[in-house]
Amino acid sequence: MKKDELPLRIGTVPFCNAWPLTHHLVRELPGAVVSEWLPSDMRSGLLARHLDIALMPIAELMSFSGGRIISDCCIGCQGPVWSVRLLSEVPISGIKTLSLDTASRSSVTLCELMLRHFFDVSPETYGLDPVEPLDVCRTDALVVIGDRALAYEPADRWKYRFDLGQLWQEKTGLPFVFAAWIGFLPSVEKRLVDGFQAARDCGVAAVDTILDDKEAIGVLFPTTRERMSTYLSQVVRYRIGDQERQAIQSFFDLAAWHGLTRNRTVLEWLR
Image (cartoon, rainbow, N blue to C red; front, side):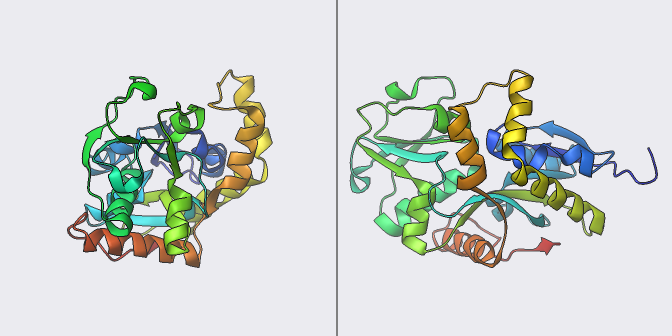
């Protein structure tokens, strides 16, 4: 290990919306080992100390103490996000059964929270089968996220279709943050934070170059190249600012109010 290297184990997600954050990560953080994990597995990876830092759903911070958001990097949106969708056969007020894509706790909690708080609806929930075609889902409604959501063209049965990022903004006037770099580190070196942010800035500035690189190694996109470019450069937001901090705290406070979290309503930051 060279003197200027940071021997960190970093976990990221296997979704295309993470590419602007991770494509240049190893270059900006020499010595780091980056691996892909499902968002739902990130918590156990951190707790077992298999990972030092993870790009994980912020909702995970509601269930364990000591975790902190590191840097101002995130995966979020200001309005429509395209890749977190609620599809229903009936109006929201009539949803009695709901299938949830459990890959991301933030998306699941966001949907349950909004149904309870804004529509007074608490349906029975089930895990969404990761391989079963969405067209044959057996519940009134479903939440689908990530690349699967981008790729899916809803069947006619799903008459009511909602983008959860847009719905959250309509109800709160705020953006939403789905994931951020999170770790248990008691302190961090400035060059670590700088590395995350430099990798993000390079990625956001050159989305089409990232797509070129992915195509060159045979990566299949969940939607068209043109739509991918728009999604990564205009739809997803990658920086936590004052409004995003307010949105995260509002999300946590509402979750606590409805009993969706037991012990975490104050955010801690390492920047």
